[in-house]
Length: 342
Image (cartoon, rainbow, N blue to C red; front, side, top):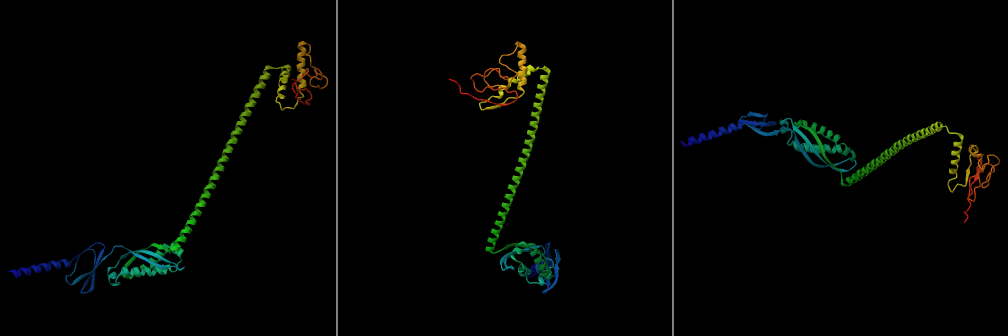
């Protein structure tokens, strides 16, 4: 009884193992290579798959998603004999699981070595400056070579990126000095441009200020002239409205004469020629009032200060200094100042 139970248990276990080997579940974006007695039979795609147990075997499971592989820095010599270290990153995807399994032993190692050799060929034809400024060109050339070479391996290279290009330390120092000089140059240019723009704006502001100031002064002068004209017009109208006679005008004229001689620095002043007409009118006025004013003589020759009645001079100026001498012809008369008597 017991041996039969043991045999049944062994049969159940074998059946269970056979079922497990028969049913193969492949995840999404994956593929599996099936071999029968060591020979490729078929490729299992995603989903539930049935294989013959103990006859078919799963050799390799391959991820069909895009893979990212960074490669360590590789020393590369440029055309001008400078050694630079270049880091690369490869983006690839397996498109044929069978070719990736049987056409190449290790496609990762093959891609790395192919990348290094291709990169050295490309950089060897460029100088350092072009290498630093032509990343897109290098990426495109490297991707073209890798895509062509890896196509038969069932691999598609989607993108190649140069992660870093490190020139020698001495070259880095020289480049930093050059960049610093360029920045200083740009800073000096920008400073000069700012000063120039500031001076232009300041000059423009001063110009506008001068224009506005001149316009203001012009308007103020016009308003002053208009006010003075209005004042003269008002005075003229008032005089004509009052109808003054020649006697009043002569008296007002003589009242303005002392103001001409005001000031201690006045040594010489001009007697207007119209003063004779004023004196005649004023003499006539006093003559009509009380038969003539003493000390006036409307005729005769020009007089000297201090002698009354000669040549239209008024009285004796006394001992005081520098009385104005009336000259009806507008002659220049010297105004002398005598020292006071103690």
